[in-house]
Length: 267
Length: 164
Image (cartoon, rainbow over all chains, first blue to last red; front, side, top):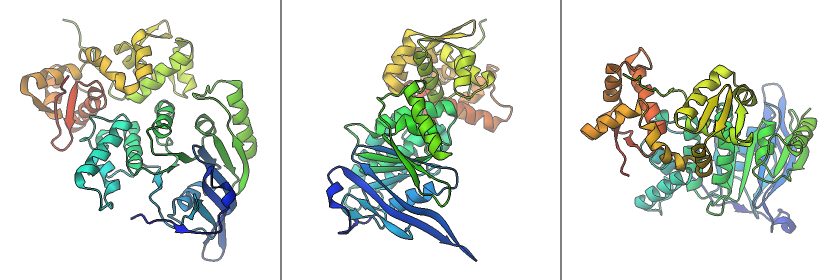
């Protein structure tokens, strides 16, 4: 399923020490019946090792398309995505994606849904696949839920199974498409901090996260950097580094200063 | 004869965790209406979550004020892995009480057997038998496993007692 990324000499070498991912001049257009629809226009930003980066923009701006381009699932019309010094032209094992609806198979148990991510790894014996899947479920607090089916789990638990499935691949970069949008406000509030701690910790293989969201408070709460996109055709209207200690106090003046900055760029 | 305490089936562990964390962030005592407002909930939607937090001994509610208990503080510190501390409190609440009684007696029980036993006690979550059964199953899966009270096998749809 996954292939090694191809080498490319065009990637800026001076940035490779700290930069894990570079999005360079990405444009994406769709050919309609009588005209061309420009979705993304000349988008560039980078993600440093250890950073949680969010992409925010209006609905329909093409945020999810951009995430799919980064994942190597969609080819851009022009521009490049680099993971370290390699161009991403197809899905690679070091970049994993968590979809908005979690994409769990309802006829598989929680454990089998995690294990399925390792399906194409022929070199790994079945026993080790199971052990890795169990470890990933335990890491997201779902020990004891191995044999439950997705339909028997709450929304928050389903999300954790999806995270475990991403973790089991041991990617360095995790892409998350609106991960909290299907949850009620209380559940989302609890899971935001929990998810951050599952992903960014010394035991986790994940070095950086790129999240797409339309929720301003959510991105300020979680991110080290926010990339703000304009309406379609989306281009970067600003990048904001969030220099707040964690856990972040959503009621603080500093937090709302950042919220205002993002809103100002969005409107 | 004292009436059975019945668990509101719509409440998830994440909702309860968010609620008690919010009480802590508010200094350990918060007005219930303000709490609901902070999360964009109406008070009616917030009440079952408050009920569960109070049933489990995580908060006390007095005159509209919600106060965090010592147990609530411990659960915040330990996260969902600390839910095993709730085992004793949960085991007094239905449907957990009946599920425990049945697993003690028979070893393995289905959610149908548990919902039938609950029906005998007059505890029904839905008039539709199938829906009633799936609500019982969901409540037990969502809470009793975290509390290290029951084990569940989705392939056979059977609950059994968790080892201590």
